[in-house]
Every structure is written in C-alpha cells, then in structure tokens.
Length: 239
Image (tube, rainbow, N blue to C red; front, side):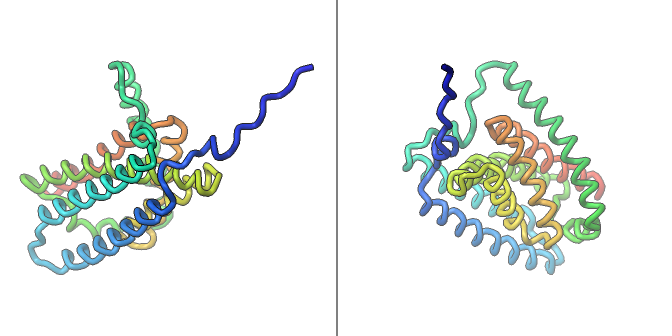
C-alpha cells in the first residue's frame, strides 16, 4: 500500500534568517531612516538651491549602513548569505536569463503602476517631488550611484532579508510578502500617503518576483534600471 510523504513542517519551509530581536532592531532603524528622509525632503523643498549631491550621498551612506546591519544579523545566526543575495551566477546564460526576467518584469510593472497611479491620481504628487531629481553633471553621476545602491541594498534588505524573515515569523508566504511590501512603502512616506500605497504595491511585485525565482537578483537589476532611468529622464527634460 502506498503512503503519502509526510508534510513538510512549516518551520522548515520558512526558516528564520536571523533572530526576532535583530528584526526588531532593523525595523526600528528603518523607522528612524523614514523619519530622517521625511524631515530632509521637507527641508530640501524650502531651499532655493538645494544641495542634492549631499542629500544623495547621505542616503547612499545610510543604505549601506542598513545593509551591513542586516548582514551582521544574518551572519550571527549562521544563515548563508546566498539566502539573502541569491546564488552566484556560474555562466553567461544565467546572467542573460536574469537580465531578461528583469526586463520583462520592468515592462509589466511599469504598465501596472501607470494604471494604478492614474487611478490614484498621483501624477501631481510626482511633479511636486521633481526638486529631488538630478540635473546634469555631478548630480546625475551621484544619482546613478544612488540608484545602484538602492537597487542592491533595498532588494537585499526588504526582499532578501525582511520578506523571508516575516514569512518565518508569520508561517505564511503571502503575509510575509505583504508585510515586507508595506514596510517598503512606509519607508517612502516622504512622498505622501497615496505614493506609499503605490510603492507598497510596487514592493509586493518585487516580493512576488523574488519568491517565484528564489532570488533577489532579477529584482535588483530591475530596481537599478528603473531608478537610474527616472534620473536620466528628469535630467533630459530639464535640458
């Protein structure tokens, strides 16, 4: 008589990547980061000649600091870094596959976000934040460095670390994806409530991609490309 295989324990399906105490510390750091971001953007908006380069450099510094905080907790727990960053590429074919997935994902998310943004009527909100985007020269160069940092660090923090950790703590993949996406949106609170909704949905799309592919690498590529393109287009429009 055939017997069915025993069900895989939930704790094995969603193993913790760090201690719950460390996750609380990361969430507290993200809350402080969101508060600083909102305060800095408000101040920047009142300046006749805002120092965007300094603003970008501070963001780069703190994003890498948050990433190192995540790495410290992961290493202390003995979790392999590949859980956070994905397996290394071993061939050009793997690289091209991830780039292709990232490109397809970017097109789909761009269309969906445009539709949702139109429904939420947030185009005017986006125009109100144009002062953050770079002009040409050094601002654009540092912006691209910021985009690379954001793509790598934010995907590692929110989708590589926070999402699987919240899956483990809640014993649910959908809940983990939702909570991670909501945290991602809340960290961009300086853009306003409706933008938080849109960015949370954007984060959920990245979360689904990471869960489906089992790696954050396609998401990193799409994230870097999207942020870089926004800066380049803003610079071209101004000139």
